[in-house]
Every structure is written in structure tokens, then in C-alpha cells.
Image 1 (spheres, helix red, strand yellow):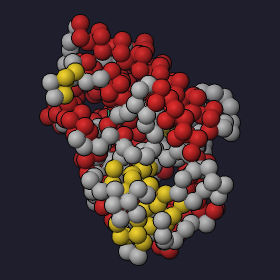
Image 2 (cartoon, rainbow, N blue to C red):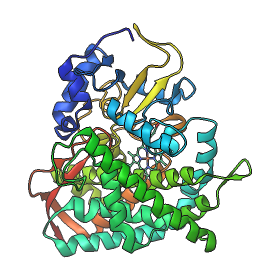
Image 3 (tube, rainbow, N blue to C red):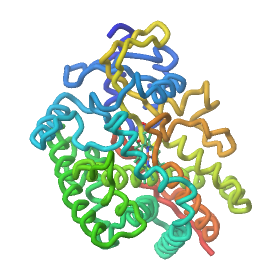
Image 4 (cartoon, rainbow, N blue to C red):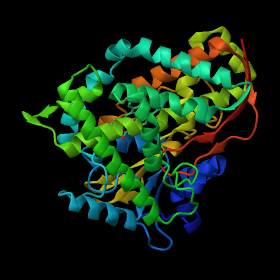
Length: 433
Ligand code: HEM
């Protein structure tokens, strides 16, 4: 690895879950790095993680995302982890028969040709044409969610009441998980994604060691796998039109997919489809609560809702990073990334690049946000992006129908997480008719 090296303080800021809870300070670090050293080597001050290249410019993040032959997902951990984490994942997966740096093997941990084949299984299901068949069902869930909000009013915490349960409910219906099992799925998802935040990982313990976090995450993975094997067996016996049925009976090259691939697929849809959309939903609500004029405008004109939804997704960038591994030497300006090097695509930094998004910290629902990178790009671009947009649009349409005014009733707090992040509390005061 040859090129600029970040200071130890900046290295910590990039990988420390606490940094992302302090959003503006994190954005300041990314802004400085982007203008001084847009491709910079991040080295562990105490040697506990392997070095990687951090990309903070939109153009570089886009280039790496789209070049899926040169920048692979599978060889190294796809979500940043330290050496202990990777060794632990390798140990557990080796015992299961196929050693991997990732505990779960799902679409994001795979490359072509297997990735392409697995993705094709459900690709059509997630396209707008098919989603129209579930629109009425999602609209009903949105209306019920708003009923619940109004019943809890006039003051509430929007995250546990609306932003968290609504996307979970939608994704569980898609997967065919019965309502009574949803709390268990929420618990497991939060253990997997909220491992770094004591409020979210359900351990009740602050400052867990990496080993303790991994124990929590691997326990959650095991529980998920056992649960979804049971669900697949049910769908084989009684097929429906849901994603669970497609996966239960899925074949590749004339062979049924393996139990591990099926479990990974269920887990990625269950997990990726839930906390992400919660975070962008809470972010959209925060922006509206801070800007009564924008709220009134949207209430009068629903054609503004898609712009609010898309800007909220850029502005929050709930998936904060994914990692890639270079397969050959590649130049980024003066910096040479060598074959085998590990890279971090930081979506938060890319989506706050002023070269693409003027005044990027401002929430501007009228900007051209369709180029944002919050859903990634290239072969791995978010499978659920149309679903996420649909869910958010229907929820905000239902909210604007019933809520007249909304304002902050306290200071919102963000989760401590390097991976999927966003608000964990959003205290609101509202009036409804
Ligand atoms: C605002 C909400 C969401 C955001 C910001 C988001 C973001 C992302 C990102 C950044 C990626 C990786 C893209 C890349 O590597 O280029 C991804 C992949 C994925 N997302 Fe989403 N996502 C969201 C909602 C959803 C939903 C609702 C679902 C499904 C129900 C979903 C399912 C997936 C799956 C299955 C993948 C893996 C695709 C692959 O590797 O081929 N996501 N998402």
C-alpha cells in the first residue's frame, strides 16, 4: 500500500461506532479527508485491524461500486471488522464446512457468477411491476401505523412507535413471517446490526469487547438460520406468492440451493430491509419536524413526497459503508491501490461530496438526488430500493393525511454504529385531525 496515511485520530474517527452517533463531527472529518487526501490509507493505531483505503469522493465510490470485476465483495469481510472479528467468522464458518471472512453468506458477500444467479431468483419480485401487487397491503399497514401514532399522541418517540416497526412489519409480510414472531425478528436484527450500541444490542452493557459483540452477532445468526429453515419447510408444504416460497423452492443450474444460501438470503432480506428503511424514515420525519414550512407545503401538495423520500435517503445514508477487495493494481490519481488491498466505500462521505451535492448537509427535497449513492451502484445495487421508496412514500402520504403540525419535543439521538446507522430516538409533538 503506497499513498497518504490518515492520522491515528482520523483512523479512529472512521472506524469508531461512537463517531457516527456524533454526525456533524463525522461529516467534518470526511470533508477534511476528501479535500486533503480523498483516497487515504486507514491504519489501526494499535494494529487490531488490517489497513484499508477509505474513499470519500462520490466519483471514486461510484467507480468502485460499478467495477464489480476489479473490486470484489467475497475475499475479505464485506462489513468492516477487526482482526479478531474476521478470525472468529473464519473459525465458525470453517466448522460449518466453508471458511469465510463473513459469518453470513448472502448476496452482499458473493461475487459473480454465483451472486448473479442467486440475485436473479428474486430480482423480478422486487421490481415495481410486482410491487404493485402488494401496494394496497402496504398502504393499509401505513394507515394502521399512523393510527397507532395518533393514539399515542400528542407527544411520542417516533422511532420505536413508527420508524422501527413499520418497515419491519412490511418486510416480515413479504417473507411470510407471522405477526407473533415479529418481536423475535426485531430482536435478532437489532442484535446483528446494533451490536455496537448498548441500547440496541439488547445486552444492556456498554463498551462490549469485540469478542462479546461477535458472540451476540453469531448467536443471532444461528437463531435466524434455525427459524428460516422451519419457514422454508412450511412453504414447500403450502406454497404462496411470497418471497419465502420462491426461496424455499429455488433452484440454480438444476440443483436446489443449499440451506446456507437460503438462510443467508432470508437473513439479508429480513435484516437489510428493515433497519435501513427505519433510519431513512426517521430522518425524513426529523427534516419535516425541523421545517414547518416544508411540512405545510407537502401537506398541500403530495407530489412533493417522492422528493422528500429520496432526499431523506441521501441525507441519512443509512448504510454507512461496504468494503471491497481489489483484484488488480488500480490508480486513483497519484495513489496506487494494489491487488489484494481492502477498500471502504463510505456512502455517508460520498453522499456529502459537495462536488455532487451543493451544500450537502442541507435537507433539500427539490435537489436532483437521483444520483445519490445511498443504495449503492453496480451489480450489488440495493435489491429493495423500489420497496424502500414505496414504503416511505405510502407512510408519508398517510401521515400527511392525518397530522396537521409536528415539531421536535426533545433532542434526537443517533445509534453508535459503523455499519447501519441512524436515529434511535426522535421525540416529537404533533397535532392531528
Ligand atoms: C432506505 C433503505 C435502504 C438503503 C439505504 C439500502 C442500502 C443498500 C446498500 C448500500 C446496498 C449495497 C449496495 C452495493 O454494494 O452497491 C444494499 C444491498 C441490498 N439491499 Fe438495501 N437498502 C435499503 C432498503 C432495502 C430493503 C427494503 C430491502 C429488501 C427488502 C433491501 C435489500 C437489499 C439486498 C438483498 C441487498 C444485497 C444486494 C446484492 O448484493 O446484490 N434493502 N442496500
